[in-house]
Structure formats: structure tokens, C-alpha cells
Length: 198
Figure 1: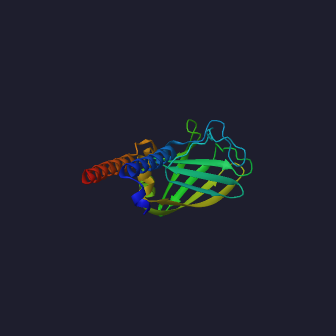
Figure 2 (figure 1 turned 60 degrees about the vertical axis):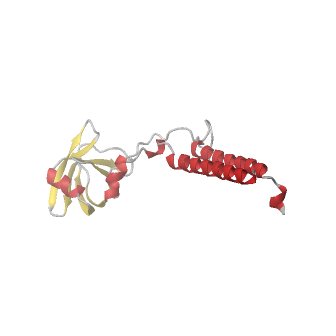
Figure 3 (figure 1 turned 90 degrees about the horizontal axis):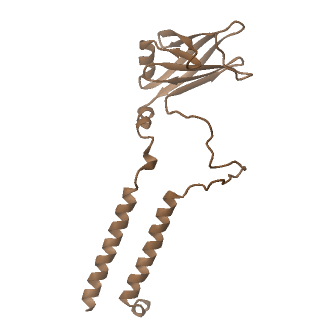
């Protein structure tokens, strides 16, 4: 009975308005960001950058009472950041020997990178191989010496994410396609029903 009360023209108008509201809401939800000066739950500003650079390169980390180590693996080198655990200050003149499986190599401090670099081809090739790698670091300074053990896991997704990191700026083609299909279907159904009534 309710359906008979409303004419076809009213139904078309109501459906079109409903679809506009739904599609506008979907489109708006895709572009909304935090407004300038917005605050999070702890009072922090949401529109400021954190000042921390992130990388999708494979990493390992380890620490003891004396040292803290972070390693970042690239295609042709391993960058090792060595810090004093208590003060978190970089340590410059240390001797670092890395062992993995049956291979070992020395890392050399670079003033440019402010870190230790390991460029031994066989070691880098082994570490870049897919799978898990146990790494033993022997660290010697003037006052301290220590062994640190770390694990480095390499998977295909580690490298795939490097190439697809900027997907958030693409046009939402799927939403546009669905909206067009819904619009065309509604338009054609309205025309067919209108022709049958005439």
C-alpha cells in the first residue's frame, strides 16, 4: 500500500537524493584530514610532523648494559648505528665485527653517515637473501667490550613495500566506477518504468 502512495517520480527523486547523500559521504570520508591545530587525546598537535624519518629497509636491533645497536640493510651495504646504552650518545671509535653463518666482516666508521658501514659483498649478499639470519656483533671500545646477538628477517614484502609506498595519493577509481554504475542503472531503470507507464 505504501508503494502505491508514492508515484514513480517521487521514488526516483528520493532514490537520487539518497544516493547523492551516500556518495557524498563516501567521497568526504576519503579526503578528510585533521584540521590545522587539531589535538589528539593527549593534547599533542596532529598536524605537525614527528621529526622522525622512517624507512622500510630491513632492520635489526640489539642492546646490552653497555651498548645499543641498530642495523639497517641496503642492497650494497649495512649501516650500523652504535650508541652508549645509558646516555644514548653515539660511539665513534669502536671496533665492530659482524658474524653471520660462516662469514664475518669488519664495519668501518663513516664521519659522513655518522655510523659504521659494512660493505663486504659476500656478507651483504647473504644478509639480503630471503629468510632469517642470526647476527653476532663483537664490539670493542677503549673501556668496554661486548657481544650482541640480533636477528634479521628478510621477506619479499620488505622489498615490495619500497616500491608501493606512495599509493595513498592515487585517484579512487573503484569508488568512481561504482558510483557511475549505480547512476547509470538508476537512470535506465527509471526510464524503463516511465516508458511502461506511458
